[in-house]
Image (tube, rainbow, N blue to C red):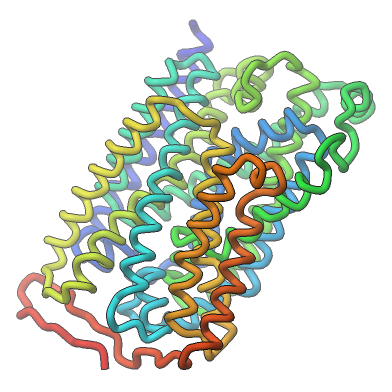
Length: 493
């Protein structure tokens, strides 16, 4: 009982800290729409980098990836390699380039950038892209709430249902309070905490297991000591490496490159982003592997981290683990909730209808939508119908294959146009859904591989067969800068 009190006390302190950041975000950025949804495009390198990293690496990296290490052994490192490659690619081929391409202060979202870059004056891409974002980001949020339930249940703090409710309520409150700035600043705190755990705990676990000799003896006895898995080697390796393809197309990640202060800060953030990723990915898999040596009979492999904490570390440190895993979940769910709500308000209302909107009105409607989306995702998560790993990979494939080719081609191919972008947005999710739900296809390779490849090829071919892009020179802005100004509408030319 005393151990649980220490764990819970540490966790509660952490949650209060997050709410405090939310309150600060409301005071500093909550009065204007651009402040609430983009922090005024003024984030520094550390906040941008860690927020981008943690918003992509959710409960999956702390529970799902550790669970993969637990079940697969050494082959689990293929996932860590894949994720690291994705981070490195984004760092040096997307971050600075996208920031340079989005100097326009009225570009707040990925849809804003795509529309201006491809000259889509009829808002077709914004509409199709928005639908994809809402559907699959909501699925992603469900995965995060599932992680919250699993983590708290795995540590014996509460039931699965209680864990889902606690995670959803806390996230909802601080995102509603502070908006994008609160999301990014809490991500910074949470990202540092995740890195500390994934440096310290694997080292402690290795010592606890008796060193590398004892660990490899166990892995050899269970036939999981080789980098090449015993069965389905080629499909597993290719499919796992394919995870890297998703990073350029995650709207809630790449929006950090749009909102970073300038190109100099974007360049600095690239290095921070990559180093953080390598630490956390390899640390998570390592901890999962060693936990299998220490606790070989876990029924649910994704309980590896919380069970290690409960069994082998001081209750206060166990509370830190509970906070770190919850941080991983929250840092992704909060980003996706605010991005989804911003998509509904910015992309479907403000930009398409071209109606003049007062900033405070837009902020409050965005808040209302965040609350509604939180409730929907929470209800779905309560059914506990999937593992975190499969749930996240499904949404990752749909988003990555839809937007990844668009981001890459728009930055590096001047001719790329709206028809090529539309092709990618349509083909990516369709191929993902079909491939995922046909067992014969799914058994071959992870659905992101064919979905991304077909979307990329399709986008190139359609672009070559249609007229070149005519980017919008002067971007529309129908958001009133303050409540006292008269409404204005500026149409694209």
